[in-house]
Structures are given as C-alpha cells and as structure tokens.
Amino acid sequence: MEIRQLRHFVAVVHEGGFTAAARAELIVQSALSTSVRNLEKELGAELFDRTGRRVVLTEAGRALLPQARALLAGAEAAREAVAAVAGLAAGRVSIGTIQTLTCVDLPAELAGFHRDFPGIQVSVRDATVAELTEGLRAGELDLAYLAPDARELPEGLHAHATWQEELVLITAPGHPLAEAGRTLIRDLADEPFVDFRAGTGLETAVRRLAAHCGLDRRITCDVTQIGLLVDLVRAGIGVAFVPRAIGERAGLPCVRIRQPEPGRTVVLAGRGPRPRNPAAAALVRHLTDAAPAGAGRRGGRRPAAR
Image (cartoon, rainbow, N blue to C red; front, side, top):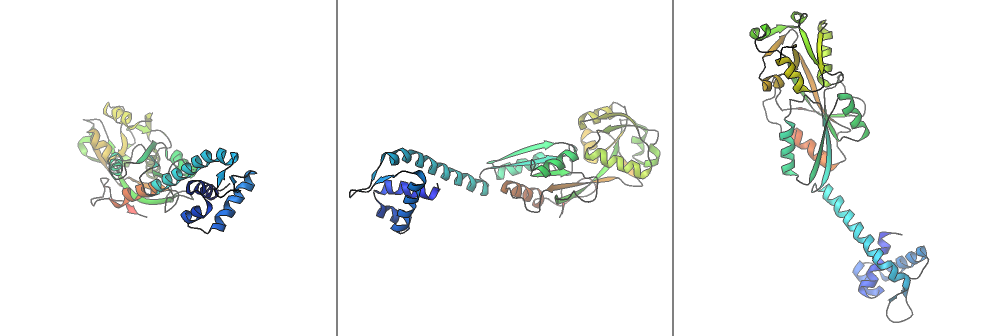
C-alpha cells in the first residue's frame, strides 16, 4: 500500500468522482483510476460502487477512509518534521567534551548557538578520551572535544579544528615554586603530585610530558573531578599540571615550565568532514567560524581549521 494510492482514494471521495480527483491531483484520469484499482487489488475489496452515476463508497471504502486520512496526516507530519530538522527549526545534536576543556568557553558557545537555533536540543556529555572516541564511532555523539594521545585521530574520525593549550604547574599559595614563577621539569623530582584519573586528556598529556623528560612523579592523590584536584592543591597535598586557564580561574599560583614548555592538543572531532545531521553541521559552523582573533599560549579561542 502506497501513500500515493491512499491520496488518490481520498481525493476521489473529496472531489466526488474520478474526473475531478484526477484534475485536483494533476494527473490523467486513467492513471488515477489505475492507482485506485491497484489499491483495491492489494486490499482484496472494492472501495467504490461504480454502478451508478455517482461514485459511492462501499462498506470497505467507508472502513478505509478514516484510516487513510490518519495515514496521510501522519505522512504529512513526518514530512514537516523532516523539513523542520533540515531547516534547523527542530532537531537534536550530541556533543562530548573532556572535563578540562579551556580553549573554548563551551557554555557560552552553546548559549549563542541556542539563541540562533532555539528549536534544537543539545545534549552534552563529559567523559574520558577513550569513552568520547567510542561514542563518536558508535554514533552516540555527533561531535566531541578530544585531547588525543597520538598525533593522528583514530581511523574514521575527522578533526574539524585544533587548539594548542599551555600547561602550567599550580601550587598552594606560599609554595616556594610560586615565588619563583617558573621552574624546570627536572627540578620537580621531589615534589608530591595530585593527578587526574587515568585515561583523561589531561592525565595523558601530563604522563607523556613526564616520560619525555624522565620525571618519575610521586603521586600522593588521584581524582576524577577537576574541582577536587584544585582544592587538594590549594590545601597543600601536592602540585599539579593543568591548563593555565584552570589555575588562573582558581586563583592559584601558575608556575611556568621551562625546557620543555609543556602543552597539549585539543581537537573538535566528528565522524566525517560533513556531519549528516543538519544540527551537528550547524554547530560545527558555529564553533569554528565565529572564533575571534587572540589565540595563543593562554588558550585563546581561535582554532586551526582542518
């Protein structure tokens, strides 16, 4: 049973005959009559009594009419829903993020996106890089901010934009390193560290930095929330590497690292260069096209477009 056949059937009822229905549907009468006949064959019953001058519904036709109208209304609603999504009047987009994202003010960006597209629902998830990557691959996420462990993203993922973030060492107020303002990696061998849980973008970057510099860190405490990490450092349990913006927002001393200057790469990733979801495509444009000048060591917004 085709929607077109049901539309032709209802047109005959509304117009009072096949000739008028064919005119309303902008097709020849023979084609419309064939369409209705095929519908009758499929249903196994005649829908119209054609013995008189006027076309009259049979019992089967009367039974079908309300169902046909409901199906046609549903089909029209489905077309309108698809058109709304395509036109960005409605829809849904899912975005994932590492917990320590600082190069982008995501709440502000999403607020701006909502003002432009109030009908689109946005779902946000924070998780480890591995979980976000799997979410992208599985189609659970349209986009995600990742801090990948490798230079290249996993196969099948595409980088829409890339940022570079500076990492600094945060300490408790009054710590000897805070007064110096800068230090070398090799001078941190005796310092206790507060670390993030394994698998997060920050932990991966810090672990890679320490291994590269031959620093065997003494981890006194590991956490799952950045707020708790900051509080523990403030309490003097240890020092920690974090993006500069996190330390500055916390009001803690930010000690610059020399030789090498540490940093990490953050990527806005998706499953392909052009998201199939219209809402996701609009969000990509919003997050990458509206970036102002001023990016740099302190985590400005401008991405390197890919």
